[in-house]
Length: 302
Image 1 (tube, rainbow, N blue to C red):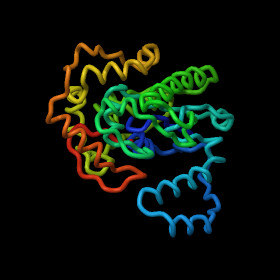
Image 2: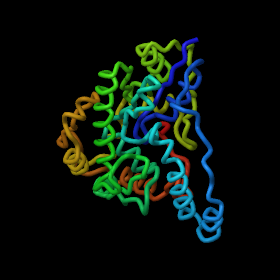
Image 3: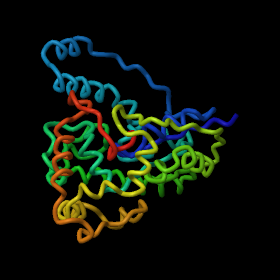
């Protein structure tokens, strides 16, 4: 059987976790350029962190140690949430790449509600979240700090389009998969993408439950996003702030369009605004504890 390496890239909350779960079902496919190595652990420093830190601060320090240990491996095999980058090792391995993208507005809402790797407190509203500086991870291939979370979307999506062109020019297969299409038909969309990359795949079975604990199941998510019910959380001003940080060419290349602020309400309904504030306060991220179950409107698997 032909062996393939399928590399998956995508910003947080674009469906990478669920896509990886599906691709792992395909016989003869590996998701890594090289086998994951177990790096040596600095036990003394780890013990010091365990003794001196608690809660999210402890997790933050331990994650920083893990990122440092993973740096040599990332040079050959970048993190799935990094700016897509075609390394010499990936070229040599003849990787096939699946890049997931998502509508920038619904993506922003998903990140505000589940701000993976956030450092410090969340904003109090979606409008304020657009203007909140973001401290990035070292493995993202980004500046240490960006002025807005929207900059993550712009850089990762633009990088993905550049990566696709570079890969194709090098004779390597690369497919862009929109989150919305993936959500509508998880198995079918992944099978189609793999087949376009000449990867033979058996029937894949998507999980009917969300890979994120406490989130809505697949059928409810499909209905929610098909109706773009998330739009109610955006005010005219929030859309305008998002647009100011987007590049129309990159948005179009990913299969989307800039939204017209005039198509949105002047203000978010009070009940929706209050619900959004509660959700943003009730973080469940690698650097924050707590959290509660969330209903429809959740982002799909990261």
